[in-house]
Image 1 (cartoon, helix red, strand yellow):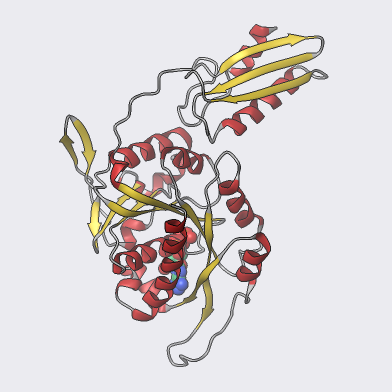
Image 2 (image 1 turned 180 degrees about the horizontal axis):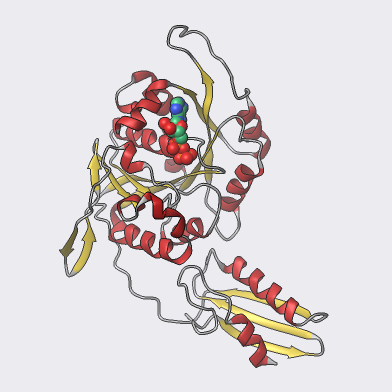
Length: 350
Ligand code: ADP
């Protein structure tokens, strides 16, 4: 019976290591008697973001294999490490704050907001880096005009470090430097996770006041592993007016607020809030609806950080490799307001 339990559990893989939970020592105890199956999972980390997911997987496998039995899977955290954690030298030591930029869906302007926020923060005098972890559509290299950059590895103190691209004083590392856009869809799961880990810990970030992380849209394993690798100080959610009400945004907020994750949500940015044609600068056309993000924010206890209208120069800047906040004062003004709120929040949080 216990053998069968272990065999079943061996099909559960920890997304971060890519190894099954039995051979990597996560099973502390199994027991079965009188229609009961009990498994104790021991996670070395106090806050393993994959713990609940693994517990749920284990439970459903056991329920299926032992119909009618009462299945109990218990998570224990901390304590004896099931395996020695590899001693990782990390280059993140000089990073003061990490801000994750997330969205429920693609195409809402998450990457554009990340790039322009980076520039707004730089204009405020901060040292800024961007980690582009959007494996499905890494667009920061294009936004910063460094497509085709080939990161070089340099040996320092016997460790290989990766040299980030630098554009408009912003240090940039992107998964896009390592994969062809056409291959992006193949890069799910373990492969992407291990590449991202390397990018996080080996990039020569130097001293940064802020590292902005452009996450893939939605919620998934990539998010969870970044959350476990980097101490994220705050999350910023980007949405368009018509996307704000959909479940994906809610799920995004819930992911950060999950008790195992516990990352403060700094607030919501409403992108593409209205359109002002150049020839009618006083007019605002709320093509995608009006006020939704503010209302959502109020209802869910999330701060509304501000809105960005649809502006031609934002799109042009993204195409030309110069974030518009660096060259168009109207755009910079919108972003500065949002950046100041974010800075106020993360500084307050200690
Ligand atoms: P995501 O990262 O959410 O997939 P992107 O940042 O790539 O979305 O933006 C999608 C497209 O919308 C890009 O072509 C970008 O230039 C454009 N865009 C984003 N925000 C704005 C805006 N406020 N005004 C005009 N164009 C925008």
